[in-house]
Length: 617
Image (cartoon, rainbow, N blue to C red; front, side, top):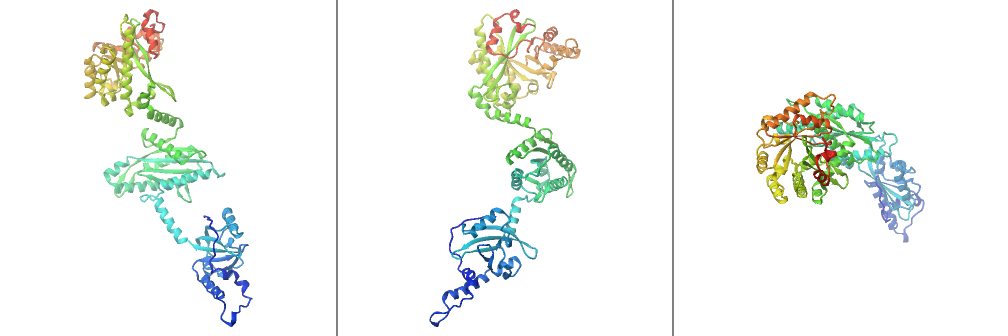
């Protein structure tokens, strides 16, 4: 339905005699000078004949909205004789009062306060058929009447509907496509704000077939299309079974490729969506028989259910897409429910990822240092450099919040180079500031990607030359899994660094491959025992003898291979005493100190072990 306004103009001349005919028939018309009838009388007959013969259905109504006269075409549309329409209400005949807005515009035309009105109506034929018609109302100047024209648009509307159906449906599965799905989703969110009888909630199951690409690649796209059609049929049955089908069609759509979505309006809660998702998984687990091919597929489903108020179609589908990714990451062939906390973590991770590289350039990173203490003498032998990100929005962030992100996007190379240079420069400053004290080494964590994506050997050599730090005062830490799996370029780099005099340490030893035979062939000089071994010593009254046996065996093995051993996570004096008795070389943990500023380390270097309360073992 639509309405438009136009400037008043001259009404069709064919209408004028029709409007005045009933008033003029009783008056004789005489020709001047005894000749033929006046020209306007002849025109009147011509116009009336044209009005009656017109294919366009028309009627003239008075200011009260009653039909003065109608042509046969209108009678034909309404399934009655045109004469039967006189004195009837045009609004009733043409359903103009079905909505208040249209009816008001129509009354404005009748009153002469509006120049034009147009709307589309679904009319009922007298024989029961329905038809679509475009109704136009225009005032007839100087007559006090209004001309109504009614154009049958049923064929055109049917063609438009067919074209729209083709445009809005997937040609393979015949399901609604992405465009129609988002149209209906948007409408559902808008309607929920005005629908007092609904739950005010909405839900989506967003699914993706696992391994569908392999079907296309091995069996061809024709089989792939048949599989998609079969999947669509099962999804539609699930929607029907759970009552999620509406008069407008199934709320199941193919969004593209092997992605489908099920929309649940007026949902009753997450349990309802979970039941639907489980039914879909169960339905798809049954094998498909496709022209002699027996195929088994599974799906990953992201489930989102929430209040419709304040929700946008884009926001809802972004949440569904994220949850679908979680389902695939968690192992596929499952459904996963949207978790706001997990999503917040993901958003934070994304925010960190987008600002990590610029943060290095802006100098937002700092280093703190945790002492590595000689278990026998109690002195500080070295420190481990631990990077902190002073984020302007999230505050101080520990390495576990951003190092994995840096490794994924490659910024670990730039960040690692900064950490290495800063730590070496600081170690050299301590050495210069305390010439009478044996210099301490600095240990820096290195990711394997730094070896692959940069020339780590050249970087280390250049930084040592730049800072003046001796190679034997630098220790590089790599995780056990990274070192044990080293081959080719990484192993060559580690060997070159070792030949340079740099110490190589295996961090978190005992949690990865633990390939002891391979250990003897690596250029490693230090093992750092994972804290899980040391924690077994915490309960001194009920110590686990197996933990002590394992640690003792590892220490003895390392010493026989010429390696030193550092124990991590030392928190009690009892742990330190046991580790010292076993023969462990150095300890690191909160018993001695947390990671602190360079100034605090300088203070520890300046005093003797007996005068260091924080370092007493």
